[in-house]
Image: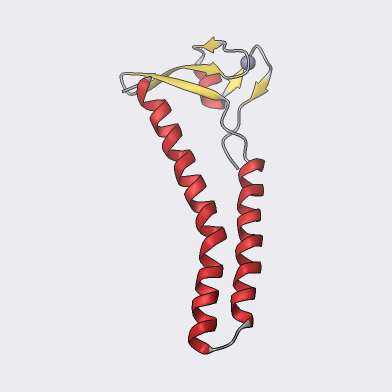
Length: 114
Ligand SMILES: [Zn+2]
């Protein structure tokens, strides 16, 4: 099922990323406030806020650092048949290019997310 499903998967990935970061921001303060109310220690709520803010920020930072993969591998019969470079849009049928995710036109190796 190539083609159409790609954009849906991409959208789903973004939704999960945003949800994850939202949870990173929101959950620690909520837990902290709940705990501070339960234990009657007011500073836990503040601590949760700080942890929530920094973990959310770190989440955004790590998201910005990982570049979206800039290539597309096309399959035929369940095997990779070609690689399309996201920068120059060139399609290569060279098995070595596919294997190494290499673009002969840009002379770069496309890397997976680290
Ligand atoms: Zn290229």
